[in-house]
Image 1: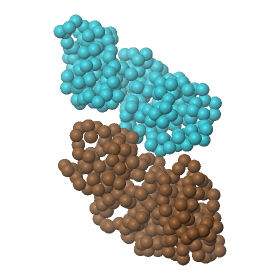
Image 2: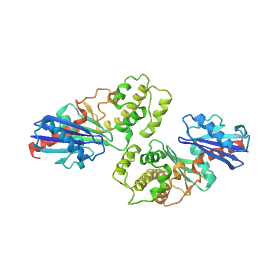
Image 3: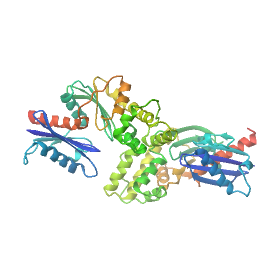
Image 4: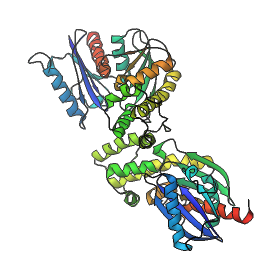
Length: 263
Length: 260
């Protein structure tokens, strides 16, 4: 039995191919302007990693998720990314009841039950503050790579800089001014990470925290944010090892369920 | 007797000189990267050189704007809302509600006879300020000054729904890709901004006449969008950019005359 999940996000597109409940292939590319073309390219590259002569027809069931799910030409069904994320996280950590999914342009806090069913969620997709986009802007303003933000932010020199504004646009100005005043890069980054944590924390409070807790989405790779959030919550978070594929994995698991139930 | 009002803004520093109730001269300088005091001093000098003999100085200086605490050459500072109320009473006494739209903040003020009776300010979110238009201008590659005029040529109504300036960036790019006309898109942008500003006017209390001031006041696109929401015309100042500085100068003159 071979099933696949494809997750077309705002920044990255991910695919997971499952062979009898084991991940056979996972692959990630950047989402291009043409979503349909992106999904084909992603699938072709993933198929090339499978056995020779393997084609999309050999996959028994495909589920698409993510904001671009409706334009994936070859999927059998679509499922919301929230359900897929909960499902994907439970594959790795069955005890998880609260999930924070921080993507490129939104941030979701999700409650789920022991069967990985979503029971409640809160989402910020109205404001770029507190999303990956905020981090991207900060990185480009400071001329560093996204991956460097977390590690550098933990090597605080004088103390986290105070970034006055929540708004990603105004914060960018604050960052420039701080840099001009000669504030150390690491301290600015520490301020950036603390700002994001301040933005996320109320979402989790509003939702009601229940352990175990897991973080998924691209921002989960940022150790500066993860460690600060853990400290503020007073608990440890599970991080899916390749957290960007969680949504695609959940979709592939849904595909398996649909196939088995003949749905 | 010459007095000065200085408005130290995020993007521009404005100076107005008054003498016996008459405007002697004005100066507007881009704030740039220098510290607010240096720019304010330079703007003050430019304004003074236009009208008073070398060696003479200002009797009293009042500073306003977000950089006012840095303007140590001023004798005192005043909140923008009070400056606006004073300036309006002097220049256009029929105005009772003022909306000041700057690059990094907006301020709605209700006033009567030179007194500010209420003020609502907002500086949390770029989507409700001039910064939003600046972002739109840079994505579309259209100079800011041309956007308003273009928006008036719109024939189809498009909604630009994003509440965040950063997300609006993506939304606008995708609207451009879907071959929407720039004119229609711009009208949607202005309408969206007007809708975000409107609650601030309601909160402070709308009372005719309504005036727009600040760097964005001259934008015909924004003005038209707000007028469409209000259902009546907005009153325009001759020089809406220097209004806060004028108010500061009026306050300075009052201090000198009454000694308080």
